[in-house]
Each structure stands twice: as structure tokens, then as C-alpha cells.
Amino acid sequence: METRILGKTGLTVGIIGLGTEYLRRAPRDRVMQMVDTAADHGVTYVDLVFNFADYLDAFATALEGRRDEFVLAVHLGSAERKGQYEKTRSLKKCEKGFHESLARLRTDHADIVNVHFVKTQKEYERVKKKGIFSLASSLKEEGMATSVGMSTHDTAVAVDAATSGLVDVIMIQINLANNAMPHRNEMLALCAKEKVGVVAMKPFAGGKLLQQNRTVNLAQHQTGGKALKKKIPKVITPTHCLSYILSQVGVTTVVPGVSSAGEFEGVLHYLKATEEEKDFSGLLVDFEEYVTGDCVYCNHCLPCPAGIDIGECSRLLDRAKQGMTSEMWRTYEMCPEKASACTECGLCVQRCPFGVDVVSRMKEAAILFEGQKSNRSSTNL
Ligand code: SF4
Ligand code: SF4
Image 1 (cartoon, protein in one colour):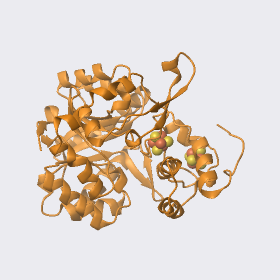
Image 2: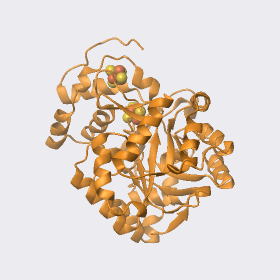
Image 3: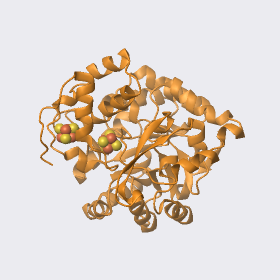
């Protein structure tokens, strides 16, 4: 595996890392297989986005005896409430959660303490005021973290952080679909100049880039006031996606979210791919405009008061629209709460960084999987 230096952290990392958002409920055996696959291929960067006990325990077991082979990013502010993910800005909860994560992982330090998901510049200012960056910095001074990171989806936030001196690493979504995202390339160049390492997330836009003949939403600002839908006709492979990302200025490593060792092996095909397989140049013409409004199943919109796993329902909805299978029915049946439980409170819509109309999607999922409309017919947004 080719390696790169992660900005001013000085850490050496493989160009492909491991994103773990789809391993939240994975059995221990599967997590062990994933970490074995990572070790076999020279994957070193592991992003541990959650602080669920079972999830961390599984990684602790998988990392036993080889902790030092990996660069672990632990998120400050990713918490759990009643079994669901929630983002917290409480200093006390952030600190407690971080220490609990280290204890669960059976390690005395994180390589990156990552200030979790800063959505807007306003929130960035609030996070600073609340002292969360200072907490991250203290954890670093006390030896419980080697470096400080921050995750965001907003280029303006990334620019503010990169020039602040507060962070060594920024985690942000980079993919073919946001090739034309305003100011993105300037932000990446700035990170390179400031020696802030860039960890690219969402390389396949939640898997959407890999679906053939799919339709994507184009936001109003790209069309002069009217939203449009556009078909992407060409076949796009994980290798195309990774090749594109790793060619962008400033990107150090990319962390694909994968749910099984087989899927991970498929992604790692990149390491032995030919130049022809890596050639993404013919695809760029389809991404001259910036795409938004599509769900990437990240669950940043949780917690849902109705207990719905929005990312999972949304993922199943998109897959079912391509062709329903009995496995999809079974997976949907296992969801703790169904899409029809949606009360249209709108909290998820406010939290979603991608402008997804979650309420409409829950209605669609309820009709498709349950043959019914959601609990309420009028919105109270
Ligand atoms: S609705 Fe938005 S925040 Fe929620 S899973 Fe989809 S993309 Fe993520
Ligand atoms: S609008 Fe529906 S899915 Fe979104 S948080 Fe409220 S109840 Fe949950």
C-alpha cells in the first residue's frame, strides 16, 4: 500500500483507510475479519465514528496485540442516547464519551481526537466557544491523543479550521459527485499549504455513485432556480472513485465505509488495478455540476424521536427502488422502528447536511415496505 504523511501530525498512513459507519451493528467476527483484511493490505487509518459499547468492544478484540499497527481516530461529540447515535456539544459528555471510548478500546490513547461533525460556520463558532477544541487540545497535551482533527461537510468550515491552527486533520466528503462543489478545490489547496491532513469520506456518495442508470437531484442554484433530476448513464467502479479522490490536491487518505470483508476486498482491488481501470477522466463530464439532495445514509440526522434508523430505512428505500428482494424485506423487518412511525417533526431535516427531504422519503419507504402512509398526513415543519 502506498503511504502518505498525514499533514503536520507526521503520521504515516496508507492511502486507503477504513470507514466504520456500516459496522455499527456488525457481529464481532465480522469486525475481526475486516481488521484482518485491513492489516493484510496495509490499511492503517481506522475511523471510529461511534461510541456504542458493542461496536467499540468488537474493535478492541480485533485490535488486540496489534493496536500500534493502526492510526485510530476517535470522535469527540459522537454519543449514544437510548441506543441511538446523537451528536453532543456538552463538554462534560464529550470528555466522558472520549474516556469511555478509550477504555472500551483498551488503549491509552487515540491517534486523532476528532471533533465530530461541525455542520456550519455558526456551529463551528459555538463549538469553539463551548471549549470543545480546547478540550481536544488538552487531551493531546495529556498524551491521550496524538493529534486533533475535525469532521465536517462544509468547505467554509474546513477553511476556517484549516487556518485556525486548532486542527491537524480535517475529515470531509470528497467524491466525483461534488467535483464542482463551490470552493472545494481552494479548500483542499489551503489544507495542503497549511499542512492539515485531509481524510476523504463518502467516496462513493453512500454507494449512489456505483448504481447504474440512477437519477440524481440537482439543486436550484445550479439550474437558475429550478431543481432538476439527471441520469448518470456510465458505469462507475470503486476504483474510479478512489482514483479520482486520491488524485485531488491535499487528500492524504480515503476511508470507504464498507460492511463486509468481501466488500472491502472489492474496494481494495484499487491497489492492483491497471491504469486503464483507474482512468476516471471520461466520467468528469457527468459531474460538472454539484449534486445535492441525495441521502448518503450517514445518520447525522439522528436521533429520531420516533426511534427510526433513518440512514438504514433510506438505504433500503434506494436499493428497493432498483429492484426489491426478499433480503431487503427481511432487513427492513429487523429495523427497530419502521418508516411509518415518522411523525414529521422535521428534526432530521434540520440536521441533515445534504438537504435531504427525509419526511417524503419516510413516506415513500412506508408505502413501499409497509403498503401504508406514515402516521400523519400534514407537515409541521
Ligand atoms: S437524511 Fe441526511 S443526515 Fe440522514 S442519513 Fe441521509 S444524508 Fe445522512
Ligand atoms: S421527521 Fe420523522 S424521521 Fe425525521 S426525526 Fe422526525 S419522526 Fe424521525
